Length: 386
Image (cartoon, rainbow, N blue to C red; front, side, top):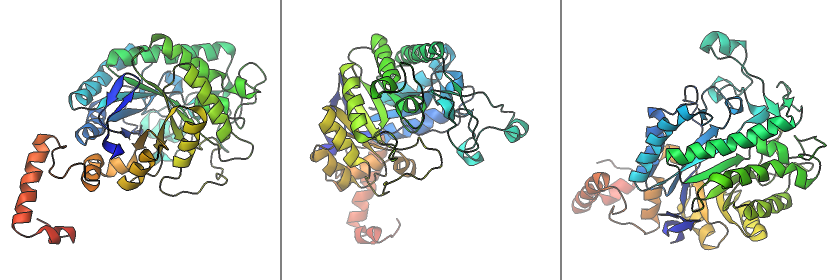
């Protein structure tokens, strides 16, 4: 079955097609990774995933979404992330990092504090100050949000340089895959979406102009990123808005990025229009897989399918049909970090715990033999415990 077939992404071999999608934890202090990140990400390597991405990692301090975001704007961030990459690679997973800039979504409270702009309550209760956000235009993210400062040409050059410098640090930290976060209303998405970009210079207006920042970030990273290492972009394939970014626009941008050395597109959607309800979006399992199939066919580039994925048979079928090349799971893996190994059993790729690390698999197989010998197998399937 294709889900467990090896895959070569540029010059990096993956043991299977399972990708751990970036999942923000908001547990960093001044952007520095700590034991939480090591344990959080390490359990997915033990659980069998092929490629494990860090959460959104800010390339500038002002590009953080929250005070708890990871960062890579300083050399001081390298050692904490290097501890993560060493563990992932020792346990058979490829270490990937998502580089990000929140743009006008910066200075936000953590989700459990409200997902609203940082305010006086955060200062009083947590000692966390707000900071000014920037964006392509002075258009707020949502009602009640402050208008960002419109970025100057110098601001844009600094951001491109920050992505380049962060990629150099990512290489030093031992990462082998970079994903640029250009989706879900983050800065690069803000530039290419007409809902957020009202500029009339070379970074606005036309489709070419609005996609220019993404292209220049890709080119800057490729200048220093090892030729054998993959570069991925996560795009919002559609804004789910009639006046916004459309699938054909993504195909155009994906072709442009491919020519600049981008190897795959992680195909997500939405996130640009604040609290406004997406138009025409139906939430169901695998609802974004057809978007990935369109991008793969239209741009001739590898795609990663994401979004409400949990059924091994469904994702394996999408891979076998050629709709996507890899599948990325997030919250399903939070609930079950061993999803990959259980999927292997369900699909018939592993019946005796051979794919598990022996420290786990030996014990689990011993229990399985005892359960079979005692005739308790049917009871376990019916919810019995042993």
